[in-house]
Length: 290
Image (cartoon, rainbow, N blue to C red; front, top):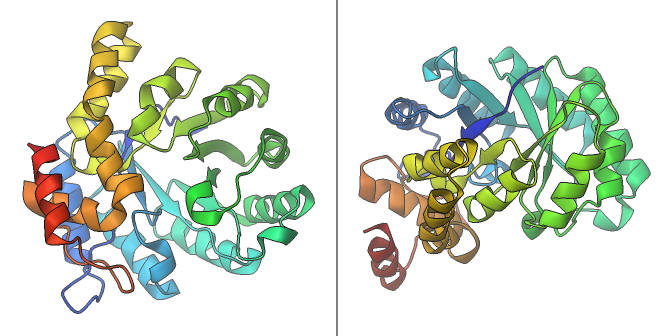
């Protein structure tokens, strides 16, 4: 059983000016973040522009990350594709490249056909074939499909499916899953905006975009909660709300990459059709960073 307690940044994928993949900058960003007490990293999540990459680029990104992630930190690789077949292929290659677990976003293009039976069939086929454990990824803002408690519990009824990243922010649903899921099933908050509330209902940690640019803030919330220092944890949670919103729901990956450039990491360009952050928003973002 893998232990997911702690904080994990979902790393943006680094591109050169011509939008080609930059394995060098992926490695350099991880080396900079390694000085913090993070539990590991997610490569190829929503912030990693997973849907913008071809298969070979995805495998190259996982390989680059594994080269510089210490053995005591976990590497989670996002491997969700629209077909079960391709998800299985990518999950196997990610494991060969050194991923400790794979995180699978549900298929959503044919969302009207994604019944509970279809979702269970998909996830269980991936879990059967994967050499490493599987994490369910619920991201309704991007997929337009918000898996229910019943869906997630049915999917989780497989020995190789061991956790959930939930980015929906529905704490009642999260609490229900934690209460009803099999023993040892671990839930991770999908945003720093609700990290402390998620921890309070039993989440074990978070995969947090904000942890790329404010890792210590996220770690401080996690540790103050673990120490029972709720007043301090609440204050820290309140302090990060606006900045977290800027690099997630409000302005997204372009804002996150701009913030990384500003603090000395490599953000670089997004891949088209994503556009650079407008200058007016850059000024607002820099004020939040200050």
